[in-house]
Image (cartoon, rainbow, N blue to C red):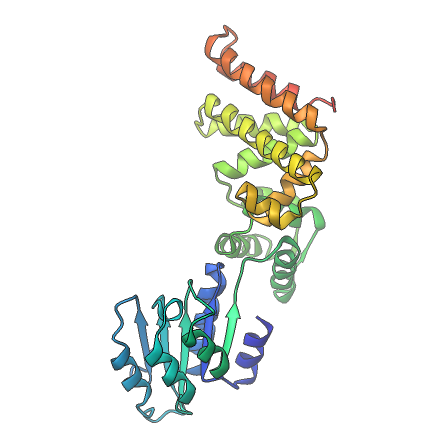
Length: 328
């Protein structure tokens, strides 16, 4: 991203940019930023956009050979073409001799570095691998956005914001805009501001409830439970999700004891590194035996919920109290 930002800031552009990676937000943002820095999208004489796997390559290359009209450059954006995950010999040959006034921006989710087209692109311009950020980098990115707007944020508010939003950068962007508008007068973001304005979905409530359980914060866990009931979420579903969260903590604890690193743990569990890190953190508050016992207790409570005269709502409350007790 630093290289892309530098080119945009200085206005010195390469003839080719290949944007790839898993982070859709960054792919979209840098496609837009590069395009707008090089040419107006309204300039139909010098800006062209192609998308999909049925692009006529010969037509595209003929267009690339055409001189720009009353402009220093012709910009061609190509998205999800599949050109770089196959042996596209004609494109590979062309990329070795791109006209000085032609600039390509390729946005490709899937690439194969062994093919000539990729190697030619890497030699002709710049390949930017825009992967999902880890927790530390994402936190720095959020903080830089906040500081650039002239705001401050407390440590607790930052942690809460990331807990609510996770690693979805599109969601972070939307919620951050709301938060900045909400705190416009005081220019400082506190935990109560995040609580008041940040939208939370069902998964957030479940995650926060589990986090409160792990921290033995019984009141917070029960509050989240009552909030979910107020949203008309079935208590049986809530209990099932809570048991699933405890199971993920148990898996994280077992993998950690076997010496796996966070990246490999995330791959095995099927979650992002940041979310996996939260499960590792919460799991560290329990012994492996305690987590296993809670899973067994959870299954028992699910059976009670179906048969007990106490009622479904109270049965879940009892399990929350048991799970958030200070037993190790």
